[in-house]
Image 1 (cartoon, rainbow, N blue to C red):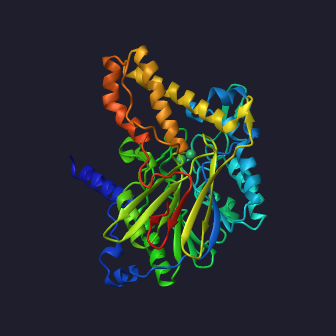
Image 2: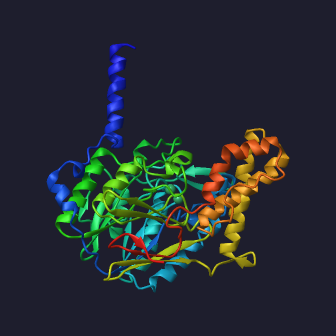
Image 3: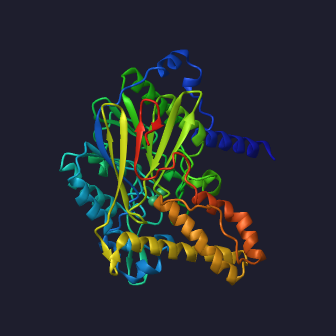
Length: 453
Ligand SMILES: [Fe+2]
Ligand SMILES: [Fe+2]
């Protein structure tokens, strides 16, 4: 390799490392003054709030009912049309629920269309008009998307998307306008919706790597600069005796075994070290979205004497149409109750059951197509694909786990059995609840991180 080329590669490699935050040096690990600060426990003020996420709003005026929309729909998006009915009903329900504020964990729009962001900001005035503060952060479907389209009969045409600056302007009334601090290198910010409670809104998205008409970067990471900003905010919060709740789009923990390997775009890059930093500064709870699953997981940090909970909420585009109603009491108990949008009917059945049925059907089709590429015989596909689909949808729904989580290989031919040896671990993982084993309703003692049973 020529010297010039070698230097260029080194430069790019170091730029990538700086960009990914992989080489960020955490101050809390070595600074004695900060170490002393970590022993201070901050008291949560009483607070009530609502969490929802992944609304993937798409305005009917962009051709939701056109042939072009249906023709260009990805199989995983098949609910986008019907799913649009869920948000207005959910907002109607939420507006009369007593709450100080509302958190939305990203993927507000289908593909970052400006008109959909503007519509979303308008819809959220239903909540802000009722005295609830609303706080948003972007998801991987929200900013600088190269596939922002409107549809006509049989065609798709580009419609304007939004830049990071546009996003902050459009949602000035949903966090950015009242931010106490904003990260200069991302759309992360802090706010204090209730006195003594600092909201850490974290932008984990990589939209600057998106390509027009090309790649959309779905993975999540914090740059070194953003990590430094986060750590400084956590230090300030400790000094000011403020408790901190964080929210972001990507998972801060794995929600099933080996998720970071099987679905690397859904768990934050370097999540082990970032979650450890949050836990070190006493952050107990991080609300997330992105995988569209109702899932709560915890990570204990014995050396720190703390526990971090990643409370992921499902999407209005999938079974089981959830949102969460949360309350922190003065005696430091966080109560999370999940509600499901149950008043919509579809083809003579409730839409939650309908969505589950169609989620299983569409995942069976996608799993079958994937298995065909491995030349698995049709008879084995007919047995294997529904098992994969049911396990996946069980995880999405946060449903009870089966007695035996491993896939049943009875009746499968050699090829089918081989596939289950290779891929069965994923089915088992989806069929297993990681600790604490509760996905919808939970009570957490914020003093010591224990789950109240
Ligand atoms: Fe999403
Ligand atoms: Fe997402």
